[in-house]
Length: 82
Image 1 (cartoon, rainbow, N blue to C red):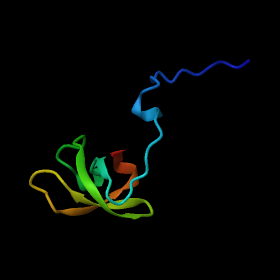
Image 2 (spheres, rainbow, N blue to C red):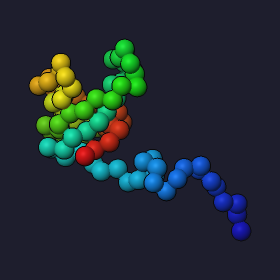
Image 3 (spheres, helix red, strand yellow):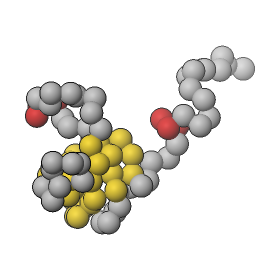
Image 4 (cartoon, rainbow, N blue to C red):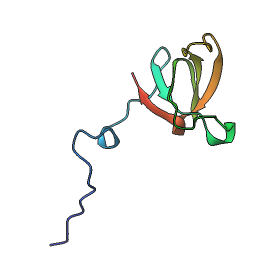
C-alpha cells in the first residue's frame, strides 16, 4: 500500500472545486495579466461575458470608472465564474 498524499487543502477549498466554464452572460472575476503591468497585480476585476473564444472571453468590465469598457480575458486569468 502506497503512502497517501495530503495536499493540505480542505474539501471546500475553491482549488478543489470543479470550475464552471464561462458562458455568454455569466459574470467572471479575473486578474489582469502581469504583461499588462497592473498597479495592483492581486486586484480582482469583474465583468460580464459578451463572447467566448478558444482560450478566453470578451468581457464588459463592471468596475466603477471602467463601465462599458470591453477587454479580452485569457481563461488562465479567470478566478471564478458566477
